[in-house]
Length: 404
Image (tube, rainbow, N blue to C red; front, side, top):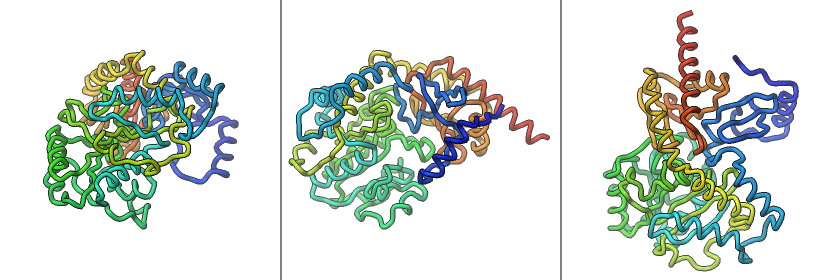
């Protein structure tokens, strides 16, 4: 049954549309509160959230451990900049480095994924004295000037014109295309190890191994944009070092999204080889490393550990793949962990709309045949069963409409 907005909801929608600059095409939901994998609207509707607000709600909506840590820190000190030392920042840095694969031993905190990517490229340029950066077809790295210039997905690079110079394109998964443009002018090769917005595109482990060889032979820094794949989403803390990536560890990992469970925070994990070239005042940030954000990072990582979320991701992914096999219209399940793309034989827009009308939130992608799932890491097998039942109902209803 299609949800009709209440008068209160309609008023909120009208007020926001009047005063806020239009960015996204919004869902007809006025979000009021959340709990775990559930989002509640102001008119009492309950939505199964398999999108997590752009993959941000990693620990689930308003995880009590994260909320308590934020409240406790807010009562002490909301913010002071990196001009002072901070116990909560020290703990966040130590914790993040402790779960990072070697040789990533330093962390730089900022505010978002696009900032993390901008600073990752800057560090590579500072370390090498070179200017060029290779990124890939289908990759998305953010909307600020350098990051959007590194984005070779759809219209985004056009939106960022005039583009920052020094960006070269290769084909994702094709090592020969990398070799054609990689030379001694290249500071870094940066990629999303799973291309989310492009339709959850993956590459073979050998591709990452060969990338590492190319970088090592030419003195190029390897950067993984793990803004979406990081912080447990693949069932490991990071794609870096995983079996799916051939065990390869880059020189820099950029993070954001789920890192703060909804509090804006970004980070770069950096190898000693790169860090040795970074001097005071080479990088800077006013709000990066702020106390509220650091409390959220600590609590997020603790919640993932305490609730065994990494193990849960692997178990529930296996259950989803098994259940999706019941739906003939799904031709392939792409991705890993809780970054999954369901490829359909036809376009997914009617399915996405039908699921939303049945109170299930999913994501679209630049591939019109791929529906994206980026749920909280606390999603359970029973939630998957509900999703599959609703998906079957939507497909059956669409079939009936075509026959009518």
